[in-house]
Image (cartoon, rainbow, N blue to C red; front, side, top):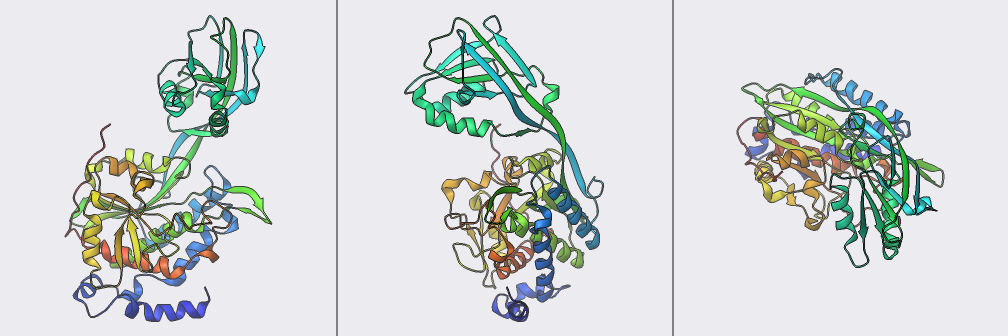
Length: 447
């Protein structure tokens, strides 16, 4: 976006979107004027830094995500945020990265090609033969492959599974998934004898003899959520969380001259909002509840950062969680609109809508109910524990051609949309931050 357009937007935004004559605006801008809620140049600076080629796509465990963590820590320090049981704003924890190694299988003396073997195991090395404590199972033609696969791998027993060749296409797909490195939150080094499953694509009957051997490379590696805090005054033990994930997917096969998946919308846009909201609330410095500003790691590889963060909190102390996920473009509802996953699971969005009622902004229900987005982002773990924890987004899933590609660049985003979304969240959450409104709880998921 050209600078002249941005300058014009700064001047017109309050008139075009937020009407200063309303009582709501007078209440929420008592100490900070509407035009100071968001510094557009700051949003651009943060966004461009996080989505720069220097960050190398911010993949977990990479140099790029470490650079992003350092940048966020500097921003938190500049704002004057306090730490929340962390050092340098880092909530560091360790996970195991498990990378498949070699595998060898023979059935009745016949060698099985590697493309016909799937290993599901967290053990560093396994060797079996017909004298080992191993069940021989089958997935037969006509059975539901995914259901059987899941049931067998979750059975808690060592198993050698013969898969009918009618499942060749599905087997190949699963082989692709399991051939990648995966991450386990529990250290695999502490579970050397965990059950393993080996799937063989074969129409053989139960073998009289077999030999199986395989290896996994296991590394214990650190990850860090970035957390800054503004302590509350009268309700310091009640937390309001503003969050987004700062990791992305790193380096991809080159498209032309570009191989870096910069993740501008996903989710540098959300992190820019979190930092901007921290700036805003720190300037106000009148929050009754404690505010936590969290940039999650490892969302892209299984919500691992937010799961760890949630495990360190008492969910009963969390009043609300506003998770911001991809706000760089107009939503299906047009400009000045965010949709909220799990909209009807609590009244958080209704409270926020009431607080922006005299503006042109609106919070809408999630338009993609079949996607189950409520439990697919970093709000999920706390939502399952009963917290009114929701994700706020504008991404049009059916139209976004840049998702998880090298095309997710700042140049494809609408800065005005990011700014208006930050404004609306800041104003919408004000009564919750001030301790005046408390959203009702989400129904807990059964464990």
